[in-house]
Structures are given as structure tokens and as C-alpha cells.
Length: 150
Ligand SMILES: Nc1nc2c(c(=O)[nH]1)N[C@H]1C(S)=C(S)[C@@H](COP(=O)(O)O)O[C@H]1N2
Ligand SMILES: [Mo]
Image 1 (cartoon, rainbow, N blue to C red):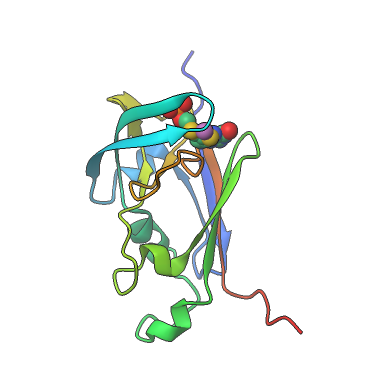
Image 2 (image 1 turned 120 degrees about the vertical axis):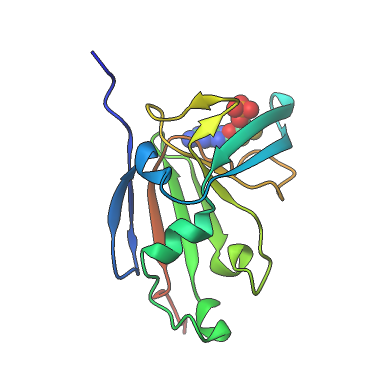
């Protein structure tokens, strides 16, 4: 029997929350990247990843900012969770082409193996450490509503 495909819930401050499988993620333009990162426990790792840009997928969900206003986007953060509870945050500006423009992927394949069953993996070629390469991504929350703090 085939293993059920993993599902990723994309929600938060977006107009169109959506549940996506790895197969759904193939409908955006695909990018390939070879990365090297260092793990604090297992040393230097090399991988090849393929998948859509996180920015492309999130923009299609309709983040709750005015896309024409750069300053409006700076409030937004992106929380990414894996099935094991491992979590990492990105700022919107980190992946925004008008700001740091990091080529972050939501990978559907690692080393030419599909992530259909395990779920997508966050890929941050700009990171020296591997800890934000969250695997088995099952939830992404876009959040622009926190604060201000007194
Ligand atoms: N879901 C999840 N993803 C994770 C982790 C984790 O504990 N849980 N560990 C991270 C860390 S610390 C590293 S270094 C890389 C290791 O990836 P690799 O062993 O596939 O090279 O995965 C990252 N992704
Ligand atoms: Mo690590």
C-alpha cells in the first residue's frame, strides 16, 4: 500500500490559507541548488535540493500586507515547523527581493529522492549552520499581527 503523502498547512495572516502536498509544490517554478552546511553534531554536510522558492509559495497565499509598500512587509515573520516539533523563524525581509533576497526553497526533493512521504524541507543556502534546514515541514505560519510591545 502506498504511504499517505505528507501535508503542509500554510496559514496565519494570509488571505488564502492552504494545505499543500509535495506534489502540489511541483506546480510552482522549480529551482535546484547544491548546498554545504555545518552541523554542530555531525560536521560538514553536502546535499542537492530541488523545489519552489518559499517566496513564490507564500505570495500566492496572499500575505496580509500591501505588496506595493516595502515598509509594510517588514513587520512579517515566517514560522516554520517540522513534524518532530523542530521550529525556525525567518523574517519576510530575508526572502523578499527588495531586501535580503535569500534564495530559500521549500524542497520537494533531496539528493534526487522525493520528499513526498517525509514532507518538504526548508533550504537556506545562505546559512552556515544546518539547524534551520527544517525537514518534514508540516506547518508554515505567516505572522504580521504581533506587537507592538509596551
Ligand atoms: N525536523 C527537523 N529538521 C531538522 C532538524 C531536526 O532536529 N528536526 N535538525 C537540523 C539540523 S541541526 C541539521 S544540521 C540538519 C541536518 O541535516 P542532514 O542530517 O540531513 O544533513 O537538519 C536540520 N533539520
Ligand atoms: Mo545540526
